[in-house]
Amino acid sequence: MSAQRQRAVAEMGSRPVLPAYVRLRRDEVRGRWVALAPERVVELDERSLDILKLCDGSRSIAELAGELAKSYDAPEAAIAEDVLAFIQEWSDKLLVRLET
Amino acid sequence: MVRGNGRSNGRGTPPPSGMLAELTHRCPLQCPYCSNPLELHKAADELDTATWLSVFDQAAAMGVLQVHLSGGEPTLREDLEELVAHLGERGVYANLITAGVTLDRARLERLAEAGLPHIQLSFQSTRPERADRIGNANNALAKKLETAKWARELGLAITLNAPIHRQNIDEIGAFFDLAVEIGAERIEVAHVQYYGWALKNRAALVPSAEETAHAQKVVDEARSRLKGILNIDCVVPDYYAKYPKPCMCGWGREFMAVTPTGLVLPCHAAQSIPTLTFDSVREKPLDEIWAEGAAFEAFRGTDWMSEPCKSCPRKEIDFGGCRCQAYALAGDAAAADPACSLSPHHAAMRALAAGESAAPPPDFVYRRIGLYPA
Image (cartoon, rainbow over all chains, first blue to last red; front, side, top):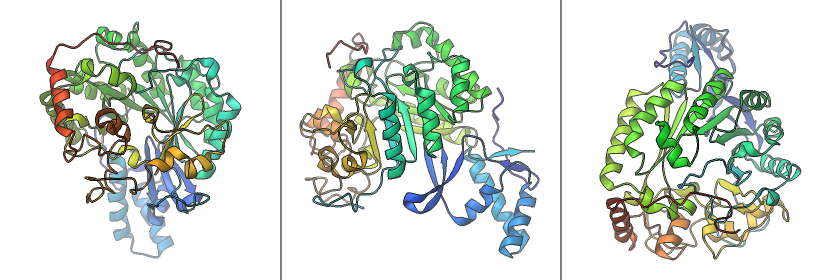
C-alpha cells in the first residue's frame, strides 16, 4: 500500500503538499477561510492560509518560508521555524503530506 | 449563540455546519446495531434526485460545509455520482459512508472523478466468518478490502469505521492494525449507541464495564503509538460514562439529518421521540425548518432544561446529553441523559447494561425492511 506508515518528520528540505482530500475554501456565511478534511472543519487564520496556499509540492519548507518572509518583510529564520512547526503539526494530523 | 423561543426568521440561530443525508434505507447488510429506526422505508418512498439537489443547494447557502452521504447503503442510489458532483460544485465536502460491498472499481472511479474526497468504510469484524455473521452477509470482508484498495489507488481518504459491541470488542487492537494495513488516514472506534435496531438488540451487543475499560486502554495506547500515522476518533460507550456525550454538539446547533423520505431531524435518531413532529423538505424550505421547525425548537439552547441540568456548570459543554436516550431510558425526552452520573436513572442504566452483558447474548434481530412496517 502506498500510504506512509511511519510518522513523517518535517525538515527544511521537505516539500509539503496538500492531499487531494484536503480542500481550502472561503466560508462566506461565517466570513472566514476553512480547510475541509474527513469529518473535520479547520478554521484558518491569515498566516495558516498563507502557508497552506504555498503547499503545492513544488517548494521546500525553506523556500516557502523565504517567500513568506519577503511578503511579511520579516526575518527569514524566525519565519522558517514557525513554518516548520506548523507543517509538522499539520502532517501529524495527516492534513499535509511531505515529499522529500 | 444560545437563544430562547419566539425569534423570527431564524435571526440568532447559528447556521448549521453539517448534514447527514440518509439517501436510502436499502442496504445489502443487516447489521443488528443499525441506528436507523425499526420502521424502514422502501425505494418508492425515497426523495427523487431533483429534490436532493435542491436540499443540497439550500444547505450550502445556509452554511453547511460537510454532507455525510449515508443510509442504508448510499451507493444503491443510482444518482450518487450526480449528487456528489453537485456538492463539489457548491464547495461542500462529501463524506461517503458505505459498507463497501456494492461498489466496483469503475463506479468508485466515477465517484472520485465527480469530486468525492473521502469514503468511510464500515467493518463488522477483521475476521471473515464473524464479519458475515454480524452483517448477515456473504464474503463481505473480502469485498470491503478490495474497495479499500481501489480507494487508495484513486487517492481517496479512507476512514475505517468499526462499530464496537460485545461480539467484537476483543478485536479493537486488530481494527487498528487493519486500518494501518489498508492505508486508512482515520479510524472511528464507534462504540454502538443504542437507538433503533441497536436498542432492539442491546442485550446481544452491550459489553461489560471491564471489557469497555480494557478497550479504552487499547485506544489510548494506539493514540500515542500511531501519532502522525492514523487519526483516531473514539465514540465513547456511554452506558458506563460519568458524563453524557455532547450529543450532536447540542440540539439544533450545528447538525441536521434528512431521512430518505425527506423529514428533517435534529439528530438521526430523533424519530424515536414520539412527542416530536418533523417537517419535510417536500413541504418547507430548509432554512425555515432549521430556524423555526418545532422539532428543532423543542430542545435548542438551554431553556427547556430542568434539574439537574438547569443549574449544571456543564450545561453548555454536554448540552444535557442525548434527548433520545433520555426518552428511551428515563421516559422523558427533557430529562437529563441517564448516561450522566447526576441523573436519578444513572444507576439503573448501568445495572441494565451490567446485567445484559453478563448474560449469554440472545440471537440477533437482523435489520430488514418490512419487519416492522413503516
